[in-house]
Image 1 (tube, rainbow, N blue to C red):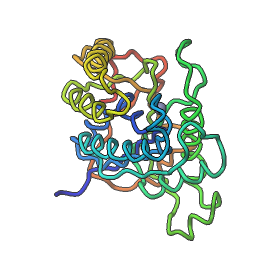
Image 2: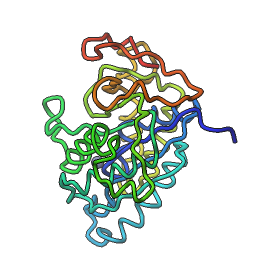
Image 3: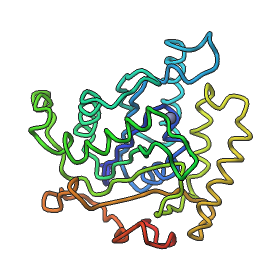
Length: 267
Ligand SMILES: [Zn+2]
């Protein structure tokens, strides 16, 4: 197998967040030569109404489901941080744990989850998403990139990583950058359906809903299917003078994605 053309790290709070939010795009990255690491912050142990399954039993099921979903997407590795599902609070320990994954994966593309409390005026965000999203954004500008933040990580052999090229954020709300995922939408759905403990008997309805949603997103930019994101490559998390040499040219992003037409896609 040839060497990866670039590296990507996708952060999520729960084992199915990636599949709902960005799996088709991450699969596209795999197809264009990325080595993808997924970082799952929680153990997925409480997201059920089944009282006989919640806890350790559910964790075991979800580890297996996540592994199969990652295989469908083509991710190389899953890093489990083991925080308790539903109980994640923003803390320096959380920031350090994500920084550890960031320094280990050394991503050129970094995919994180939207931390806003209410998204798009209607979506009440999960508390785990808020904490994980915020901590993962903070890692890009502090503990992931700066040696004086958590110097004990240096003792673990984990140097700061300053070669980040793009930060992506996935969200239930439409984002300004629409990615054409026509070639990978079926893998997104296949990966989502690996999470049987979450989608259960609703598989058909969820598949239909996912495709309709992706069609609507794609239509904004003239694609059959799309996923959309907020993407940035500017600010204190980026260090253009310290970029490593990789065999991949990232298409230019629009200067101000908030005001860019959706058709000005990053890909
Ligand atoms: Zn979630």
